[in-house]
Image (tube, rainbow, N blue to C red; front, side):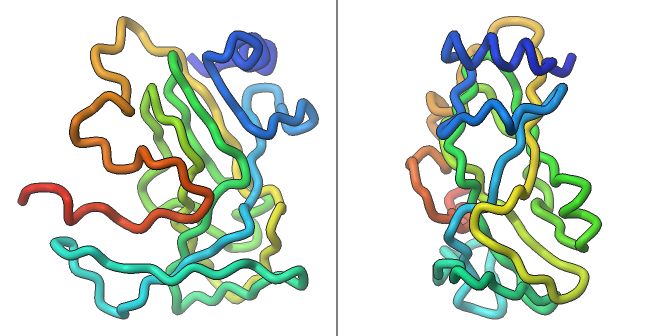
Length: 178
């Protein structure tokens, strides 16, 4: 079941959901709007290797914005830091962002109970579009979990995205055994 605005507020007050900074104006009837952080990243190599550490180059979005192009794959980050201790967070793009041809995640829209970090965005665009730091980029929805959690995300031995970081995080696929 998706949490309503009233339930999100209740869990923010109890610290079971943490959103920093929190702005009540960003609260929808069943979601919370998040914004594009100031840092974007591009992979250094044109060909990525799932078994290797693919390094990124980060840069800040200038005041006049930055034009994303369809020939590149960008990593972005949310301005908001979040924690969820009892709920499953989902990040979806805002419809107004989608109508600009911007996709904010390739596959990773679902977070885990215990996820405590900024969200890395996997951004691609259909045509050139100028984006700005601080613009609304997505919305978080929270689902109740049925049953007890045995191992929250940050307690998992193989959790790869636990370092609190305000810049996008590159893929850590290379840390898996395959």
